[in-house]
Image 1 (cartoon, rainbow, N blue to C red):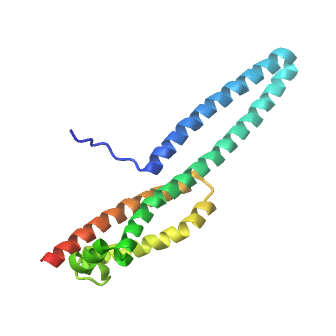
Image 2 (image 1 turned 180 degrees about the vertical axis):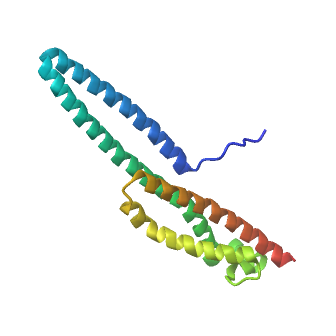
Image 3 (image 1 turned 135 degrees about the vertical axis):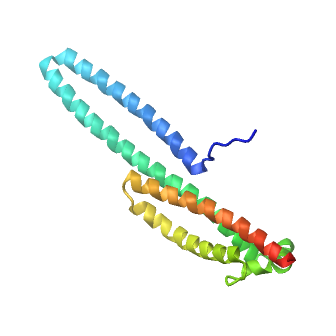
Length: 186
């Protein structure tokens, strides 16, 4: 029986795992803050209550700040991992265009010569050329974009965009290859 659940990219799986680890860290930090607060209250009475409040406020701020930085770094790593999916397709394209290996030369000259033509009559080939150029530019700008973003929602949006580009480019590559081969036969 086929699995109809949506497939997660490597980056999405890693980010989900990171969120679970972060949640465990929050529980541990909460437990530590509670124990410290109880010790202060028990040992110092009214003064302990005031100190416990200060410890909770400072501790919470430190935990949230650390987790925020950790979450941002995790998202940046996920974006980088997702970008490798785009790079794999672009590397396959570059190999097809430039490799001197006999199987690649035969593929590009005998089976799929139209795949090299950005103005091809085959629409999927034209779309792939356009998408590949856009993805190359996207990858060139990606490190700076990821570094400049400083909030979780923006980095999450960038991760989503990177994942979508990877899936779309891979699909276009497969379609362009198939259509180019059919055009040669037909």
